[in-house]
Length: 403
Image (tube, rainbow, N blue to C red):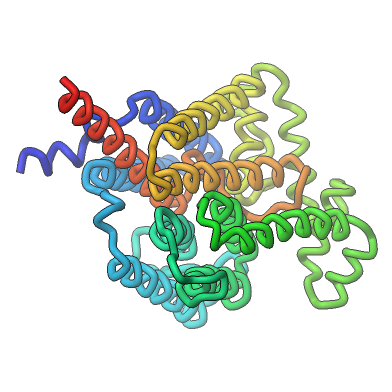
């Protein structure tokens, strides 16, 4: 019982303390800046306190999940049967979100939410698909020899089809392009990790897909690409690509990019001061979520940028450091997959609000307001701490045997 209670409040004793310090630092910073960004013309003392209390409650649940998973998660005990149960559970949640949105109405323009008036928080199951992708590749592709199989065997194709189905469902049925892109990016990047020769052909194909997407992006930035998107009915996506080329206040699609860049330009070295942002007063609708980085730069300037970049650099550095130290490919997949998860979100959010790439509505992890995204990344980081703890335990046992 004492161990169970302890696991709620702290990570394992062999976990990486520097990694935890960086995570806690960004979480606390996130509470401060999102609370600041949430104070606008429609705010009252009551709803401000309520929003802060709700954020603290969500953060507490996420931190508890991080601690518990870091203490109890063991990848070697996650068999194929458990993996299929997780996959079925995720698909059930994705379908439930679509049904809920068809009954209650689409939320934020997509059908990826489970929400109701009586629910204290809204749930976005597609965020948890990123965890499933990482576990899929770790369990089905890493540390396996595939003796007697070829690249088109069902054991190879089945996990790929599951990932493709999740991607297609989120993009096509739920109409959540941003989340679907992050799922696809994490899957492709992590799929390059396994060293099994049976997968080499597919890994080359995945690399070609990455190059192809780069050329597609360049094409869509041009006038012919935007005309093609408009012709096939993706006018809103064409407008976002147009906003990258011409981020001026010309339409609803480019309005928020314009104000985001305006806020960033005001930041300078020390910013205009915490709580002093102008853009949060109705100019940036998603100031606490998608555009939180713009608010951070406007209010805290270079200091805010340093805190955000510094926190991410430390976390990614620690994860990549241990990915080189652990011996099992499955453990590497958890660490590298979480790194890809963090990097893809960071790149898409910061790139979107700064006008470098089309905005996709992806939150800035560990900082932006959003319960499902926060819980998802904290679960992944908890799994990483469990892998690190297991690595140190094995190292201690080997030293004990030698002594």
